[in-house]
Amino acid sequence: DVKVTQSSRYLVKRTGEKVFLECVQDMDHENMFWYRQDPGLGLRLIYFSYDVKMKEKGDIPEGYSVSREKKERFSLILESASTNQTSMYLCASSPILGTGHYEQYFGPGTRLTVT
Amino acid sequence: GQNIDQPTEMTATEGAIVQINCTYQTSGFNGLFWYQQHAGEAPTFLSYNVLDGLEEKGRFSSFLSRSKGYSYLLLKELQMKDSASYLCAPREGGGNKLTFGTGTQLKVEL
Image (cartoon, rainbow over all chains, first blue to last red):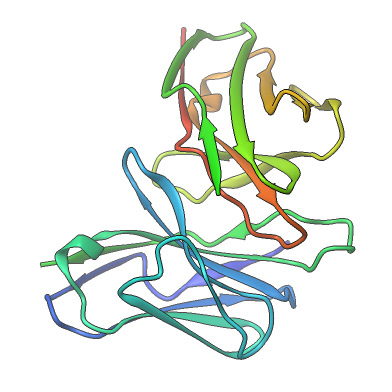
């Protein structure tokens, strides 16, 4: 079974703090994604990566950065947390196209509260 | 970009059949996913359609019409555990980037 894990289920941070959210997958997937999910807005893509050290902006990258130094690990960084970044953050991974399997596998999520 | 429309909420009775519709407008359409998400949990994959027609998988089926920009998820023999949010997610282009709809919250009642 594919397993995607995230470093914390719940996190409370103060405005202005630097926040790191970690995601690890154990299926040797090339693609990894970070989303945030808010009521009424659904899942929105922040950043994704299709290879080590590669990253691409999603739909809402402002205020976030990412790091992918190893294939299995994809980190989301909030350089200076703000209250409007209070949200549920979900990480996902998927294999490359052509393998016959395209679905994204999601981690359990991190509920971040910025006060 | 993509524009995805699905109903916000639906209610159905245990044992019944329910159809959740999704319409989308996207450039470079390359397949559509359905995911299920229980409250407080991560989304889990249900189905993937890339060609027109119906894909059946047990109690769940998914239909796609590329020319109409339309898909539906059909759930048969509803069970209480099917109460969840159902997310429609078209894929754009040749990569694996998805855009998710806001989801349809399905409530199954006795």
